[in-house]
Image 1 (cartoon, rainbow, N blue to C red):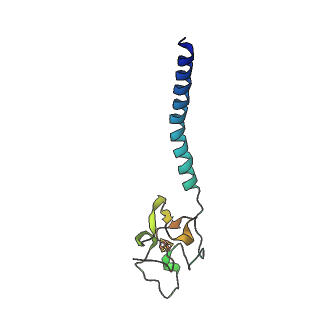
Image 2 (tube, protein in one colour):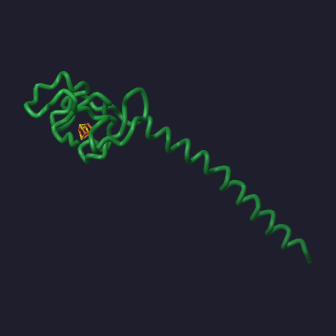
Image 3 (cartoon, rainbow, N blue to C red):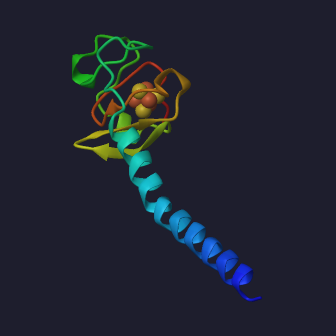
Length: 104
Ligand code: SF4
């Protein structure tokens, strides 16, 4: 008479354990996806350059860099990081990069 309950409980525990084990895997996959984002190239959008010093844009000023811009989302790897501006949603930008949307 207790057989169906034990079987149900075992099934529940097994399913729960699998779900818990899947969480770190999902996290790793997500992190891999972030690291796989392409890096912006010069001219990507808004006169972007990977090194602000290379810009000849009239609005560029020496102390303006991606990593002190209001859109900077933080470094991901080796000076490359995210940008909250919609034109750069699918790429990483360089910490010393610059574009004409720079905001202090
Ligand atoms: S808006 Fe432009 S300057 Fe600012 S972080 Fe993004 S790419 Fe760099």
